[in-house]
Amino acid sequence: MQTVDDYLDRTESAVRLLFDGIKDYISILRTSAGVTFVTSEPYGPKQDAEYAAWKAKNAKRLLAAREAEQRYLAESFALDTLSGSVLQVAAKAIEIYGKSHPIPETFKGIVKPKLSKFCDGRDVRTVPLGLIIYAARNQHTHFNEGKLREPSAAVFKRLATEHGYGGQQQIFDPAFDIDNPRLVSLATNVTGLIEWRAYESYLGDMHALLQT
Image 1 (cartoon, one colour):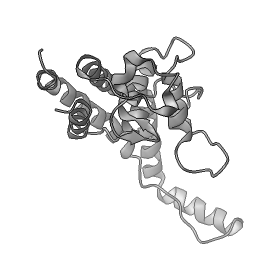
Image 2 (tube, rainbow, N blue to C red):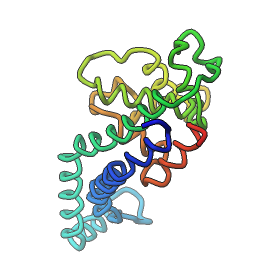
Image 3 (cartoon, rainbow, N blue to C red):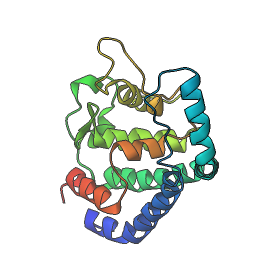
Image 4 (spheres, rainbow, N blue to C red):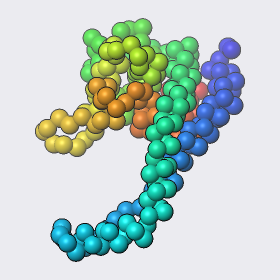
């Protein structure tokens, strides 16, 4: 493959299938949405009685929601595997066809010059998209190897903290906290954050990153 357009063309069918699979898995969880208890009663016996009546009336929907959530959790790593594959295709394209870019001040001394081709793309939580792709691909690929290396660890720290809420207090977003024991791979969380839920979104960013 001589050009990035060749690469994108020859990987298109595979990446489209990956996004179709991602959509199917996410739809499992969406079937559980819309079951919420709302009341104007304050805490106390009246609210308890109202909740009991609501729970009985919505028993089938609540059961379906729990079952959908259990199915989703059971398949969550399969979903991460698909998301990680998308990130791998994207990272490989940047690795092969990307051009060097200035390393942002916040990553100087952390990102080595040979990785400067990943220092491009729109900023998400103050991190260039290319670096997010690089870090998320690495975290997914090496999830079983213990501590994540730099610059990937620094990328995730910014994704976990540069969210704009919490004021002066530093609050870690658990969806991007690499020390969160509930998470194995963060690939799906990352592709959600960068809004890669369809092939067209992915392709638009890849064209922008690789200037095609």
